[in-house]
Image (cartoon, rainbow, N blue to C red):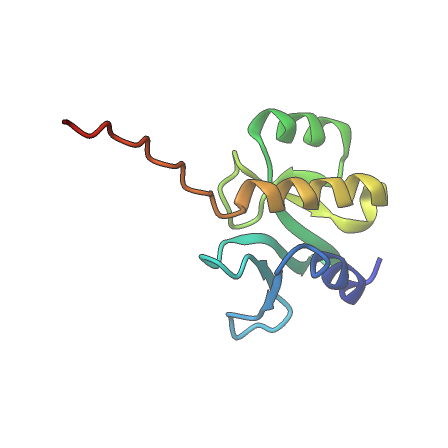
Length: 120
């Protein structure tokens, strides 16, 4: 898969935004527009196309054991983020990991406050 194809896939998520916040334009950040949280960081590491994705820690361990190209994230929290060598995992699994990251980083909807009973 090519970098532009990966970016195009990430842009299919609701309101996803492509960003280049650093001087190094090889680093592409995919974020939520509300709050600006990242859900993916796309880059080349050692000549390989990679993507950093947020992941539930239990699922993270499973993915790291299953795929050689999934390991603790470069330059991110190692418990909650994975680096994925894009072409080392099946396309369907990669897309599932992106969806999982998007969901984990989505802005939280505030819970409605319970209405207070008015005194008479």
